[in-house]
Amino acid sequence: MNNTLLIKKSYLNEIAPLSKTYSKGDIHDEIVKIKEWLILWQLNMNDVDIFVDIQNKTFDQATENVVIEFQKFIGLDAAGIVDAQTWQQMVLSCSKPLVLITTTTKIFQIYAAILPSNTYSLGHQN
Image 1 (cartoon, one colour):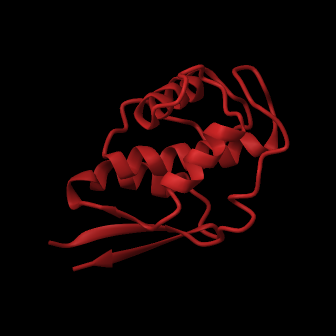
Image 2 (cartoon, rainbow, N blue to C red; image 1 turned 60 degrees about the horizontal axis):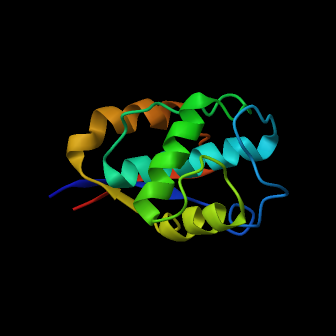
């Protein structure tokens, strides 16, 4: 089977603790990083039913909804906020390269078009 890989290139800055707890309505550069990790989790789960817009720095309703899905999946309190515990679980569970089966190609193409190329690399695995 030929799989598509999405590999996050730089981890040390990416997995550093957040400067604060984030919730709906917050605006900050770190929210883009949170959204990128949420997208990686969605792609890894092959479950992208909520589109997260990483082109803005706002913690919006869609972001809150995906955070809640993630928290439920991990077994955390599904409060919809990204605190230190949620962030730690987010980067822990998504810190390996993601192998995306070819059935996710359409979803993958949508996100690949907006993810920054200096942060991600694309590849294939047979």
